[in-house]
Length: 277
Picture 1: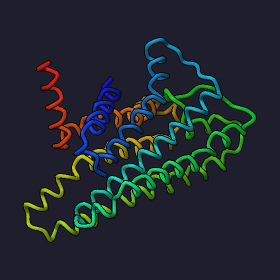
Picture 2: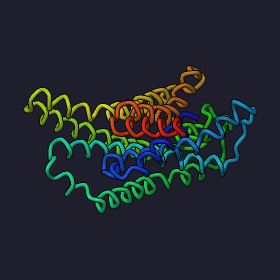
Picture 3: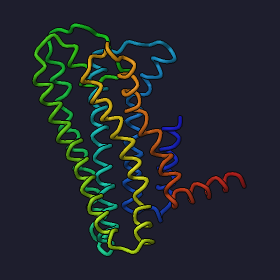
Picture 4: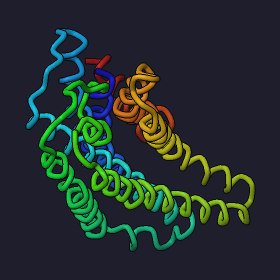
């Protein structure tokens, strides 16, 4: 409920407020859309498990869920990069901000990000579907994920391991590197500014930094725990698996709703109008 309501409210406020039709808030609305889609990919099945003890999923549905799960993860990571670049341009090149981040450039960037995510993740169902036999049909997580499915196969999974490593380095590795470089350049710029201007510049990045940590810390955690057999620390597998898919959609709207002054103001204004009615 928090994920759905929070992201829907963020989208509504940005859509209805013309003064928020700026690159920073357009990227935020894109993040909210991806969080909503990511949550809707996994949460219905997860609720079915917890509420109705519905623990079965067909193989084709499992592959479909796996594709969209990884596709949304790639989009989430990519949007965090664009938001880091947005902060870099706003702080390091403020006079060129409107000329660099135009509506056209944002549209092109969005299409490129979607194409990259789809191109990288489309092979995943096919390299899983090629396995002839399976040693088990029992999943640890409450959703289908490539790292776990490949370990259930009675076949050589070297191709899957190599391709999974490629995805990690090409998508998450490059994205985190670009975010890191963006903030290095931001820090280099604000160091030479007066203290008040530096604090103001850094304060505009706090929400994004929190969103990055909320996304990457569970991702690193799930990557680490998958290096160990699930029967040794099963609860840790389940914990990080659910945290990875749930934290971003739930916490991001709270972070931006609290830390972003314009959204907080619009939200309070909207609520006061509702109270008056």
